[in-house]
Image (cartoon, rainbow, N blue to C red; front, side, top):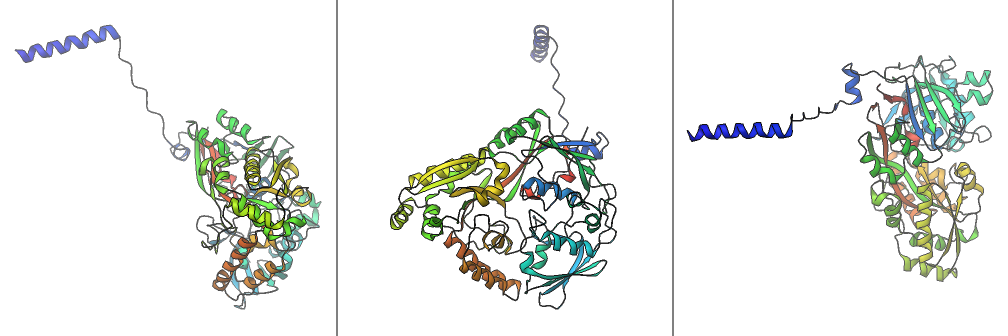
Length: 527
C-alpha cells in the first residue's frame, strides 16, 4: 500500500510541475560536426567555384623572380613548378618536374636530371631541357630579374640540354648536395621568345595561372585545366586574394566571413581566433626566422666588439613575451642555422643576454651612449619588436631611437637606408647546407643587403664547399656556425610557429612553415 501511495505521489508531483512550467523544452539538436572533406564525400555539400582569402599586402609581381616578397613567393607556388622540392615535414628531397637525377661521374661535379614528359605551360608549350637551361641562365642575372637564383654564377659552369628530357649541370667544383639548390621555378623559353619579358615572366606550368589583378585591391588565380597532374587535387576554379592594408583588418574580415582563409596573421590574434567558434585555427612548427640586421656600411659596426655589445644587450625572452604572445607563436633562436635546418649543431649558441657585458664592451670601445637608429615598419610585430630592442639597448648604455618606415620599399631600404640596425625576418627553410649562409654573408649574396664582408667568413665557407662528401660537409659546417655565432654579422632572435585561420567550411588546408612556402592551390570552401 505504501509503495502504491508513493507512486501516486510522484505522479501528482510530475503533473503539478508540468502544469506550472508548461511543456518541457526540447534539447537543441546536436551541431553537424562533419569536416568539409566529409561533407563533400557524403554528398551533403558541394565545392564553391570561388574562394576568397586574405593577405596584408598587394601582389608586387606575379613573376617568381620579379620580387623578393613573400606574397610573390606563395602566389607563384601556385602558378609555377620547381625541378625538385624539399619536403618540409620529412626533410627529404622529392622530384617535381625532375623525375630523377644522378651524379654522372661520382664526384659531385656533373649532375644530370631527367624531366617529366607531357608537362604543359600556360602558353601551350611543352616543358623540355631548353626551358631549364634558359631559366637558369636568365634568372641568375640581376640585370634581368629582381630576385636572382642564389649562387648561380659561383656554382655552375655550364648548363647543357642533352636532349629534350635530359639536362646536365656542370659545376665549377664538387657540391654533394647540389640538387637541393634546384628548388627553382621554371620559365617557358617559348614564352620569352614570343612575348615581352614582363608578360613571359608570368607563364608557368602550375595548377593555376595568373588571374585578374586589381592593383591595391585583389589578385586572383585561375585553375589551369591542362595541368599535367590533372585538376582533381585543385577543386576551386578561382582563388581570389583580397589585399588588406594591415593584418588586423584581415583578422576582422575573417571573423566576419568576408574572407574564408588567412595565413598572414598577427601573433596577438591567436587567442581571439582560437576562441571563435566560426574559425578553425591551424598550427605547425615554422621556419620563419626573426632577426636583427646590422648595417655594416657604417664603420662603427665593422668592429666585432660593438656587434657583440648589441647582441649582449638584447633579451630574446623580452621580445618573445611581447611580440610572440609569450612563446605561443614563436620560440627563441640561438643559432643562425635553426633547429630544423640541415646540419644544425645544437651546441652552437649566439651571445647570451648580458647587460653588464654589453656595458663593459661599450666602455672598452669608448662608445658609451652610441646612437643606434632602429629601422622598423609600422606593422604591429615590427614596431613592437623595435620598441623592445630600443628599451634593451638603452638599458645597456646605447642611445637608441626608432625610425618607422614604409614597408613597401623594405628591400631597397635595407640596401640604402640610413639606419644602424633593423628588425627583419626571412624564410630559413632550405634543403641545402650553405644556402642561407651564402646568401646572407657571402660577398654579393642575394640577401646580404647590409653589406657584410669578411675574408675569414669566405675562407670558412670555402672549407665546407671543398669537402668531398656530404657527411664531411656537415662536420665542417659546424665550424661555420661557430664562426657566425662568434662574429655576429646579424643577431638571431626567434623562429615562428606558423598558424592560419579558416572558416569552418574550408578544406584542403596544407599549412606550410612560412608564408613563402604556402600552397593555397589545394584550398576549397563548401557551399
